[in-house]
Image (cartoon, rainbow, N blue to C red):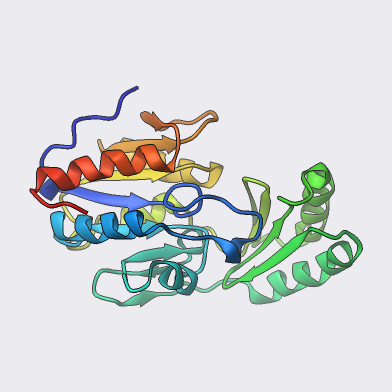
Length: 248
């Protein structure tokens, strides 16, 4: 379905996943790049919406700040565990550190044995990436499941070539819901764009709020709309900006 006409940008609250939505997915998470066109568009959208733009991602907040520098946006990191609101206040719920460290130790033999696998340690989560070794998907899934079996506080989440052990019960939908209770997001029409399985919770929340949910790329989804890729989403965002008379 074609994306809706982006009228009245001042009524929108814009939420974006990061990898696969604002930046192309790469084999190693640290090698990702954000284009200058994307960075400029986000800056213009901040002005067009009165600051109602936020990133909702599986990454840590600090890593998003690094990639978007000099922009500093409201961000929900690690799938909603940590959240920096529009005033810069950090919300940090507790999580099971001991269980995550035990999972890390349990996965170390696999990482040492199989080249190309990457273990990413986050605040509140451990991510096992197998993008360079896609044939090891079942091995990685089984290893992660076995390591988390004795930790009831841990939930496993699947993404594109990654499995994460998450030490909390938050999700992207809950994070978006929290933003929508605060200024400048309060009372606006929520828009959420994402590309991965972990974005489905965000789509469900936005759909329930009468907003606009956008799936980037292929795959089954409950999102109302779909665009082919990051570039197609950027074209639509620039239409929103053009409504205000600005140009990225």
